[in-house]
Image (cartoon, rainbow, N blue to C red; front, side, top):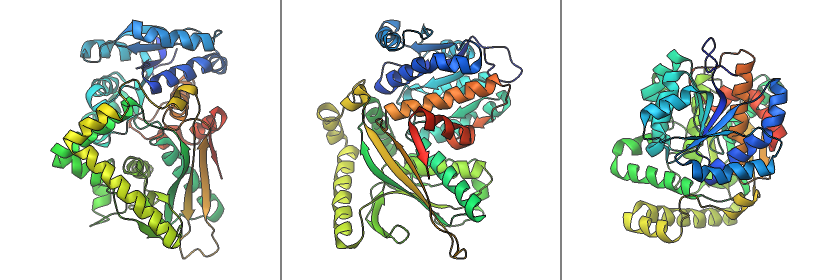
Length: 435
C-alpha cells in the first residue's frame, strides 16, 4: 500500500474517490475500475481503492455497473460518508494515500475534505472551477499542507489540464527548438461536442450568486493573478493592469498574432489563472506577466467581426439572465440540467473536443517559428475526457508514492504535480497532446 507521506504509516487504500453518483463521478469510477488490473500489474502488487458517498445504496448501482464492465477487476469498497461530519471526513481521508473529490459545488461540499487532507498529509485532486473557493483554500491551508507533505491539486479536469499541460509542452518545445521563450501564447478552442451537467451548473450558479453579493469575489474573478503563490513577486515587478482575461463577457477584439477576431473562451477566467500559478511555481519561465489568453477565434475580415459580435451579444444576454435572480431561477427550473443529470453523449461515452495552443516567437528571434500544440479527445470534454484526466493524474501520484518519491507539498497545479509524465499517461489513455 502507498504512504500518504513519505515515512508515514501505510494507508489502507491507495485511492479514495468521494462522490461517484453524479455524471463525472460515475465516469471516474468506471475508468478507475477498468484500469485497476493493469495498474496493479504495473505496481507489482494489489491496487486498493474505495468509493465514498452519503448513501451506500445510491452508490451500489454505479459499483455494480463498473464491475459488469470490468468483471476481472478487484471490487472497490463502498464507504458511507457524510461530508458535513468533520470527524468522519478526517477518518476517511486518513485511510487513503490519495483522494479524488468529484462533489460540487465545492464551495458547499469541498472545504472540509481539503482541510482534512491538508492536515493528514493525504494527497488530493478535484474537478473544481470555482476560482474564489480555490483562492480561499490556498490562503487557509497552504501552510498546513506544506507541513504535512500533502500535495493538493485542484482544477484537475477539463479545467484546467489541457491548458496547463499544453502551455507547459508548447513552452518547453519552443525552448528546445529555439533556446528562447515565446513572447505570446494563445489557446484557441476548436470544435467540441459536449455539454453541462447539473453539478457543473450548480457550481456556476454558486459562483455567480457569490459574485453578485460580494465585491471581494468580483475582484478575485477579475484579477489575473488571484491564484499566485507569491503575489508580491508579480505586483512589485508589474505595476498597473496585467495581461489576462477579466470577464468572459467582452467586446470582440482583433488578435494580430492569430490574425482573427476573438472573444474570451468561457473557461479562460479559471484556466489562465491556473497557468499563471504554474508559471509562478516554476520560477516564472514565461516572465512575471505572460501574454497568455484563451479565446474563440472567428476568422478575419468583416465576416469574422460580425460572427464574433453576434456571439458576444448572445453571451451577454445569457449572462444577464444568469445574474438576475428571477431569470436565474427560471432557467434552473426549466432549461438547465438538475443534479445528477447532464448531456446524453456523456452517458453514452461519446463527445469530443479539440483545441490548439500557439506559442509565438519574440521579434528579436526572427529565425524562430510558431510552435503549436494540439490537445484532443474523442470523449466529452467535461465528463469522459475529464474522468480520464483526473483518474490518470491520481494514478500517477499513487505510482510515484509506490516508488518512494516525495510529492511536491502544498497547492499544486496539474503541470507542477504531473508534468511530462502525466502527458505521457494521458496520450496512452485517450487525451492526446501532439505538436
